[in-house]
Length: 178
Image (cartoon, rainbow, N blue to C red; front, side, top):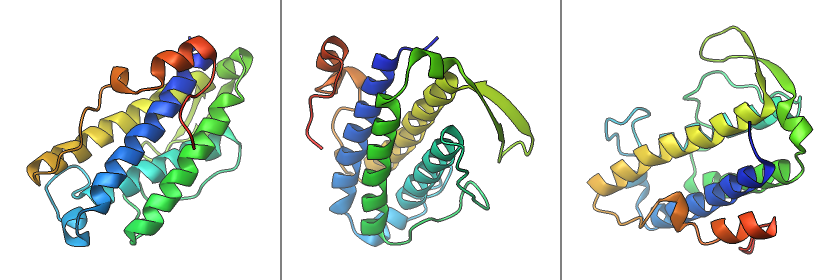
């Protein structure tokens, strides 16, 4: 169902996009980042917090070390620099997790308790990772919509624009520096 090499590309793309968007946001005021723009989570800051929270929940489930949260809109970090630092650390953890996956591991079932549905669910590891990357892309799209409304240029977000994608698929590893 899923290919370990493609998941490595997605992990690299995830890091690349997060670095680019966080760089743009570093040039914004805290008021701009936290302004309620009527998006699903309201602001850029709250959306970034949600993405980080969800990633940590999923990584915890994959490692059988639950990351406990109270709600999906829980603020992990009010300070942008702390949020950016933790995002970078989590992106490294995602890349490390994905780089150590075997095709067999991707097929293994993982049982967890859904936060939103409040019930137990079981899914294969590969599907969970695909969901995690799709979830990130979905919410980063909301962040870029807010950035556009604020007149900020974030550049191209397409996966095929990720500089390392083609190289990673043909060499089996990331091209960019950490």
